Length: 290
Ligand code: SF4
Ligand code: SF4
Image 1 (tube, rainbow, N blue to C red):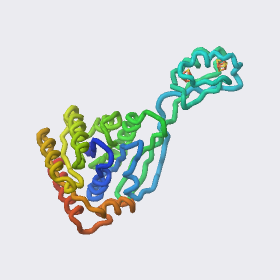
Image 2: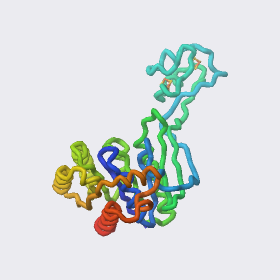
Image 3: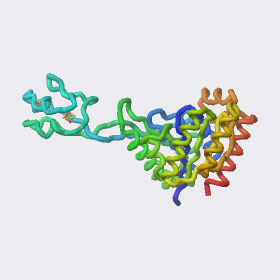
Image 4: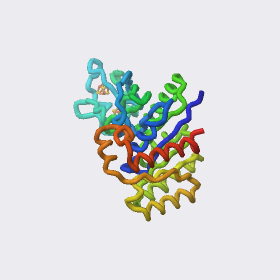
């Protein structure tokens, strides 16, 4: 059975995207959870889980030198265009761009090119189903590739377990990791906040999902903080053919739930926030998930 891939996106950080993802995922059954924000994964903080497997993610190459073979001729330092080899002919792995020129010119064949480990992928069992997420190491730049890999692994895992849904918490912005998140998605849920920048960022992310011809729906978080702007955001989304699923009111209890590392419905019993989220969940199920 092909699992349906639901992607939750916001054009920027701080909109409450992960909090809303956590609430919807809390109610949805028969799914795998995926955190595609490989620079700062927050979804694992909301769901208690146990890591069952972790593996390195390798991308690109780095030069390694065999000291026993090196005669200190200096050719490698002379040829390296990136200043990654110092006056003692030591290679700085952080500065090395993996071009392979030093290995090519080394007369002693003392340098080899090795695959570079740039991150880690984690497979976990959470209290709400399987969970997969990743961390890109600081300073590394292959976030798009890592997102693609995480999504590929999630799809394989979902197929193996015959799960109906893959719920992907996307990364903020509209850059490479977001484009990698969009690839293969079946439907996109956008989360916006009622601010000028929220409107601007929403317009950018709508353009992106339109480019990929994906169906989308919108949720406005903390909508009552600026009702005028919430109306503008709704109008902009409707103009682009997006379904408006609902508005979530501001509630300081949400912050407490986040601080406790739990999905909202797990902490708050009865409140306008939970009612709004439940309604959004039902609408999303009826209109976007079949
Ligand atoms: S080119 Fe090879 S032999 Fe010469 S300094 Fe570099 S690693 Fe050593
Ligand atoms: S692989 Fe390229 S960047 Fe890295 S040390 Fe060798 S020449 Fe410099």
